[in-house]
Image (cartoon, rainbow over all chains, first blue to last red; front, top):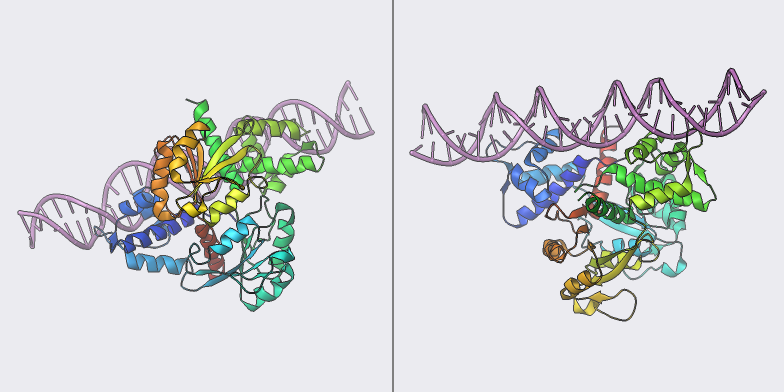
Length: 208
Length: 208
DNA sequence: CATTTTATGTTACTGTTTTCACAATAACTC
DNA sequence: GAGTTATTGTGAAAACAGTAACATAAAATG
């Protein structure tokens, strides 16, 4: 499953709309949104058109109703509990963002790690052994998970998660995980993201 | 600057090739690489063809020479020093990955934060005030930076970095940064990545 | 050493995404 | 309230990306 660019853009529009709203604006034009989201006004209108979102000729879009539509489109009208497997550097960073970073409708319910020294029950994010995954996932209607374990363990963890009913995965391990068709997977390899930047910098130097 | 998919795939092929090499293989076919990287064999060959990389009819590709070509293509024959601005959760996580996570040719040289309580000179990653950025960037030939500050501060930090000569930026702040044409920027919004997964899960439920 | 096999490399095709152009229309102006 | 202006919505065109087909050539076979 490759996440389509128009979905990512719509999510970005939503973030920009939130900022416009905070600044006290009530209406917005495709030009404003495009400018804030780094795309052309035509692209904004086309994206809205694709998802049946309409505005007003000459008067643009009403921010509140646009936000409502987008929130409904993205299932943000209810809370989604998710879990993190792997409490290494990245896992811990994500766990700490529970209140500040992840948007309101996403809540990191629990975390898991193989290492017993990382387990706890009292302070902050609860961290459990992997053996607790089936129980916690099924009892709390959890369908989405973040994998932040080392590459060597990622496929095994992935298989376990799918077995217990996980349907959506965000994978930080630098390996392309094999999943059945019904599972949505999103691969995020941070070193690749840096490498790509370096490539383009080199390319620009070469062709000057 | 949007990073092209074929560049990301080539970087993934490189990771897979490394694993094949570790396992003792010396040759590889487009079928193997495609399978490991989650794409079709035709896609692998097409990507290689695009960048002038050739193998041997019937005998596939020699892993070592393929890795050499890719390493040269991605400027991995020399070390790239980079910096991190913002030692919040994400910044600290990235800083800790210096030896394990970031590939050999990328080295996080220093980190910066506004908060004086995060500064230090002794243990682990050195963390400096933002005022030290111009000096350290220019003295160490640094052209790439990671921004992991809050959204509200990101554009200002971005402008400062570009002023002192940074040419490539990986941005974790949930805001689309405005940069001049000569700067390569890669936006990574982790909450958006999760939101996109949730969208596709909802969509699948709706249309069943 | 002729034949068969098998994997590459490229060309042609198909599909998708983005850009462009402009008709439609709501709001504004005088 | 007629005329002007500004912005949307969309159909067509262009650009881009991915897939498929197949000619080519190296290796294997016997």
